[in-house]
Length: 120
Image (cartoon, rainbow, N blue to C red):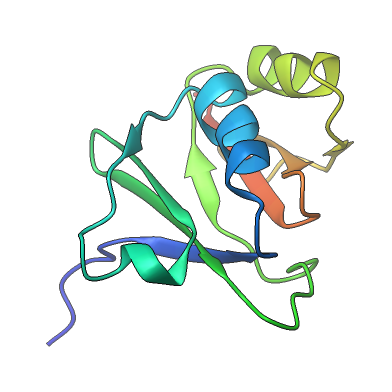
């Protein structure tokens, strides 16, 4: 029986850890956590806070996820999207879904991430 999603893993090219930190930690505000010792040789990095877990793994023939994406609930999609844009990353507005404002942002590797804000 399925219970919950433990984490979402996105791919990145080798050597992209500093760019990942600049986006996920510094812009989105998700703290980095240390990878388990047995996974460190694989490269990549992990960001986790309050049940949100985004892991980035190195993929040899990396191609960004342009359609598949995680959707993350946020408190203020407009403010966060503006912060992402100001930091120089791509932002693409999209039509609201019933009960949500939403937009897409793209990490430094081109992976699409949906930001969703619940509305009354």
